Length: 178
Image (cartoon, rainbow, N blue to C red; front, side):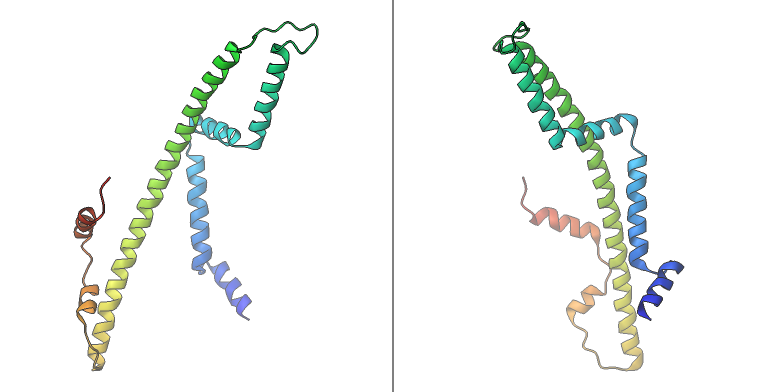
């Protein structure tokens, strides 16, 4: 019976967990689809250079380069003899470009993380406002029913709206600086 009710809730769109998962998946898909062409290229390159395939490709590349340029292959004249100046130039240029691609990907991921953080802050602030309202309503119900409830200073403070600006100022004052 419980499984049937759960399926009915999912079908009717009443399952908050399923709705949240769907919302998150939709936001992630939108973020992926909104990437520019250069960001897609940078992400693909970054994904490749962070793989074992890239390590193997480099190991094979270096092994072939060393083998050819150390004169270990009969009949093949070394084109970049030791200390491998051309190889050094290629690896240095590759390092510069890979660093740029990684930074492009990281910048995009930082923007996305900032967006998620802003969304999380907004949801947290809404939840705080809802909880404050619930505390106020609960106190009114207790008073209306004539129940002797002890109102503490802490409850009074929690029933008030949170002053976000004051919290930010207190955090800045109390958190250690860099």
